[in-house]
Length: 467
Image (tube, rainbow, N blue to C red; front, side, top):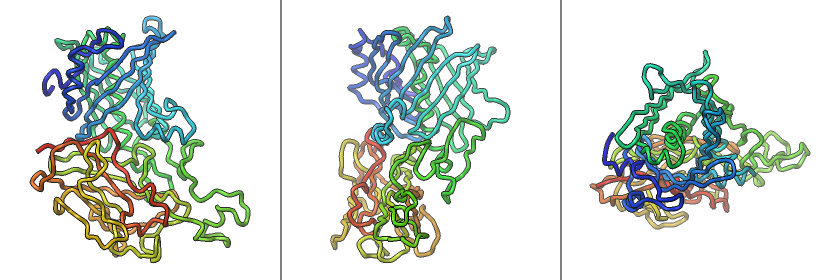
């Protein structure tokens, strides 16, 4: 385990009462520590007694294995008693984007956002994960090794291809340490830390149950990275079948929909009549009217695997990925002349990315000014910004920055990359999010559709770039 007892911050979390924090907990918040990779701590919490169960509410700060720090609100429902066979612990996590998306889907946040339920069956622990936001639901059974108490291993039915999940619990001077590790096809995802005996007694949780908060962060990373291409519609050119045969109930997004929930109105709908919006926006129809079918370039926000991501390679370089999305009702073709406001965009950016300080709105490097003769200002030279341009070779190569894209309504396209942002170029030390602007020069979007072109990698996610 790295660092001081304060860094783990599961230490000294006991409250004087359910509404008052200890002096040590106040000190943790005052120092505002970013955990090391794979570590987490509770920033604040309170225990609330309900008529038939307890609620544990609070905020967790965690750093994933890729150097991204996150603050996340949680709510844990604590039900029943294990000796009576009625024990159930339910963890609700709230991604910032899922709040707005749940309203669009006409669902409550608890129905839409991440939900992890722990129950017991004989000597096993049953973990059920469900999230419309992540487009995933699956069950994992955990069995403790009788020869090595505290060592838990996932168990699946024969023939299921699934990620391996392990939990290691070890006694410590303060209580117990834990380490969750999930081995996926693309990466290994982990969290470790320490729970004090005082805290677990106060909130009425076992060490396994208390560590669920950290497991929620492991699953968030797993869902975010493992399903980037299997979460796409089956007819998407980038679609790849899930690598986890028989595991869970992940559903490819069909036309912007999961189950009965759809985001946006791709294609305009229609009842089959000869002049409905759907007919006017269908190139195969004799009533096809391109002027009635605008394309709307933006960035994808659902499901979790498609969202804007940033990760820390080192203090001088970050990696990122995003999905360029056509949220309109008409097709977009980067090679077609006359799109947008009449320019073919031969020299204009598709997407411009930079970094923005946490808590600020202006990026380190401003985007090119649309429809202006003002030359872009690059205060750090070639560092701290990257552009994607239309290519003329027909080769899809987002890593080089040159791409040729055709997007039907509702279709997205991946734009991964890395970006230097060196302290040697004068970059200030601090916490940063990825900042992006789609079509910064206003030549690709249908005119008047630029309202959703600016975004970032999340209001409470950041990488800490040190000098």
